[in-house]
Length: 67
Image 1 (tube, rainbow, N blue to C red):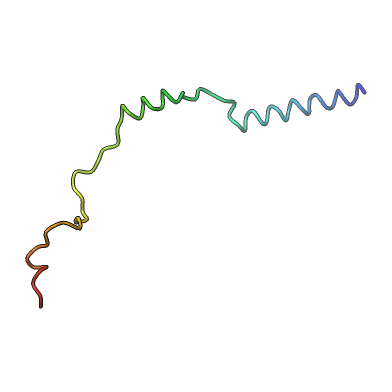
Image 2 (cartoon, rainbow, N blue to C red):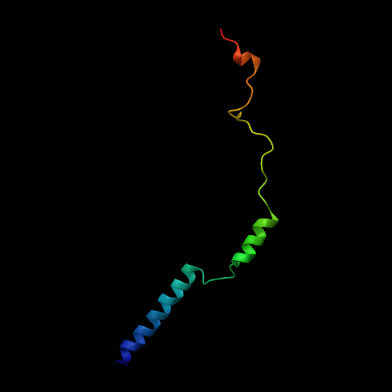
């Protein structure tokens, strides 16, 4: 029994260490409040002009002439 424990405990310790390294060990993740505050303080800029004409835009005179 002691030989089994002598082999099992280090094996479990190695598996636990590998899992801890692979998963990152938790770390200092921001809370949802911190994430929301950071997002609000740096808003995404909105484009001022659009390259696609809107469906209600008035067509140019050259577009209304028929050939």
